[in-house]
Picture 1: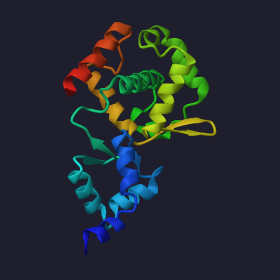
Picture 2: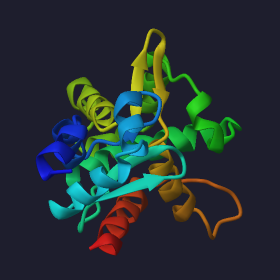
Picture 3: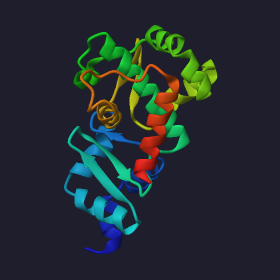
Picture 4: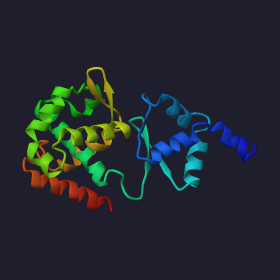
Length: 199
């Protein structure tokens, strides 16, 4: 079979490549058509094509996929805001006794998100996320990147959220209980350390 015919079988190649290159996480349910293509008969061809273009696709056991960048795509300034948003969310959920592993069963209402904003005003001000516009920009970007999805009653966390849950667990792995630092300076240091570790 010719290269031209091979490429015709990869009908989503350009769309998937552009989305993953922009940092999107492809979810098995939300992006079912793309996921099926990547896992189907021509899955190896997609991987080979992306590899030839200098990109390595990672398939996580939690049923999502993303490009592995030389510099971790969770280390950028914009992504660190998303990480901070998640850390505050996981902290609140943990304090309420929620099972963090079952994050994809939660429904996060707008009122719940507002409560997180109000109780973390200082650190959000430091990170310039205290305005409604910036707060919503972070949430919208997280949705664009495939970490969460809007529904009628709020948001649900998608499988890619597991990447940030693992960061949360690592931050607290040597503590008796999972508690984020109460001090915003300590939180900023954690985010800086994570970025440094990935360089």
